[in-house]
Image (cartoon, one colour):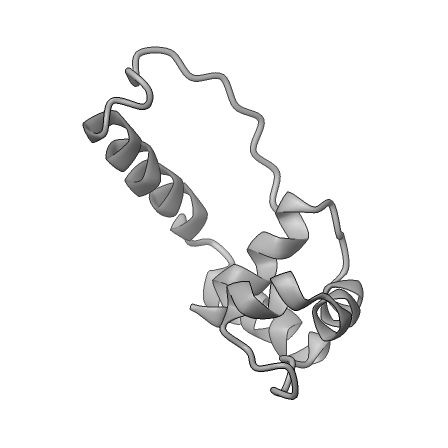
Length: 92
């Protein structure tokens, strides 16, 4: 789950490289909290993250399934009606 959160931080904040995401997580307490890291906890290495992204997530629809799951929860809670959605999805 840390890998998905790591990449999500990059996507949501427009950070396009794993190296830069790693640097940001090292100094940003909010990112550390989101990933479940202590202040002195080890930040995942950008190279390891990049390799895992390519090997584990390439060709999967993980992010689409995650989005659809969250959307379904929002529909059930009445936050959106789920009839019309326009999105531009781009993941690294």
